[in-house]
Amino acid sequence: MTLFSNPSWINDFEFNYTKLEEVPQEVFDNINKDLDLIIGENPLVTVLISAWNEEINILRCLGSLSKTKANFPIEIIVVNNNSKDRTQDTIDKLHVTGLFEQKQGCGPARQFGQENAKGKYVLLADADCIYPPCWVTEMTKILSKPNIVCVYGRYSFISEPGFPRWKLFVLEKMKDVITEFRQLNRPYFNAYGLSMGYVHELGLKVGFIETNFWGDDGQLCLGLMKYGKVRQVRSNKARVWTGPRTLQRDGNLSKAFLVRIKKELKRFFRNFDSKLPEDATHESKSQTN
Image (cartoon, rainbow, N blue to C red; front, top):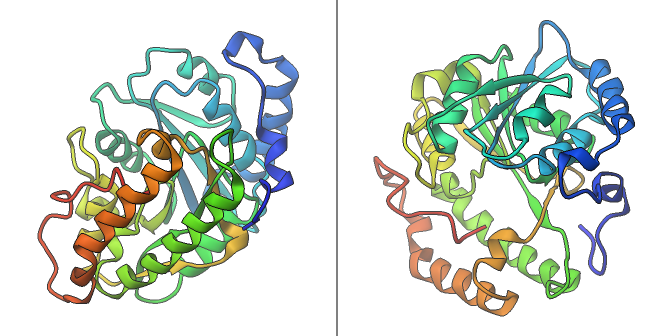
């Protein structure tokens, strides 16, 4: 995690294009060359991505995942969740498994994706995120341990004008602290679909929410807890990087800080209550990341 600047390696995937027709064929060829090296017929891990109107972001995401360093085969499934832009065309140009889910929502898209997945383990990724080469390996290393049914990783924000890196660093350190408290009894509040993994067989038993609702990832994690343990992947080198879109919804960084602090203070003492709810979606997580 860097204090004053974005890590230099993500620059390789900051493609300065705004629409698909601007992307040279060479970019697709280079990504496909790398994808062919990591994707296998009998994958141990399925990386599952839901994409809605992400024709350029999904290119950045898959470009980063193509650099994955793993000693086992993987598959990458991208579910086009009824996009209205050229997301499908981007998917079709890349050597990944493309699916289409008309029913809107990450829950329905991820459910359809896992029903078609081949891997023993499923890692959830987001179309607007950039992944380090070690991400798949670090997540799988913890997930494959005995009695572990679900894992989640850490993430950081890519700085932009109005969102300086050092302020984002402070926010992330605060977030890491509250994550440790949640891990005590409420790990499902830490389980975001941008960096989360689970045992495929058990994920099929629990299933994703089949509605367009925030919290499908956390609800799945809650359902998995009856089968085993949830663990955090604390490795900083495996941090996922994403833009500050969720922070921008609050207007500016100061307001985003206040919204998150107020919400965490309101529910802080629930972290020490071992009684689990039946439904994790009653408390939307859309403002906590």
